[in-house]
Image (cartoon, rainbow, N blue to C red):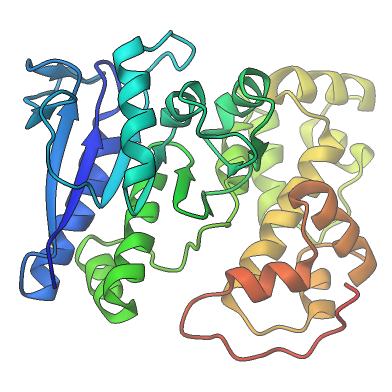
Length: 331
């Protein structure tokens, strides 16, 4: 097998994990395969050290003017400020190189660079949830899927923020070398192989909505621990020792969402994990996660994730447990 040249383009001020994580996945794949499948090279605009957000500095192997070998996979890592204008030379380089590769794409806000090069038009894409609306506004011809861990559209791929780049790289390894090698890489790096490309950034966003102070924090934790309980504003306000009106106002002020929205999001997150990790029938999943019926579960899933529970299970259930589950496909 010919070696595959992986070029990772880096900019100053980014997160080191966005390029180091995928690089380590590919390098570990070399070790697990027993020979060098991948040659990994870091590319920058200038032949000088690139300083990351953490202060870590790396020396690029090549600049965008040096590459004269065919690139198999081109990965573009974003900048801290994705709206900062990119240089004309970089944009032109991306426009020349991307069509010549077997596959190309971006980690996190690297999608903005692809967009500036005109490579996102009519393509399904994702990015870090914090910058999803900015990406949609900047590149309206892109088909944004803001809740995805990573998205593949033909030869192009995009991923969510930071650590999602490792999920993406692992999927590319599985594509090239098969499931057993990808699983060995995941085990060595203590990763989950089960997070497939479309899986939600949902629980990450839910964690980010934690309140800033008690007693709202305590109520949030109680909701997570008891999704089946009666979780009306009245019951939650009593638990917090507040009036209903004050509780609703303070909760929204500290979390950015209403108590009802947080309850539904928590229940959907609980149901999502049950669908991924268990064989429980849909009715049981609905009951355990606090929904009164499978129809209520279906409506909440479509509202929160844009997908039906049965479709979610068939796409995202844990690998190695892909037995067909016969359920009502209308749910």
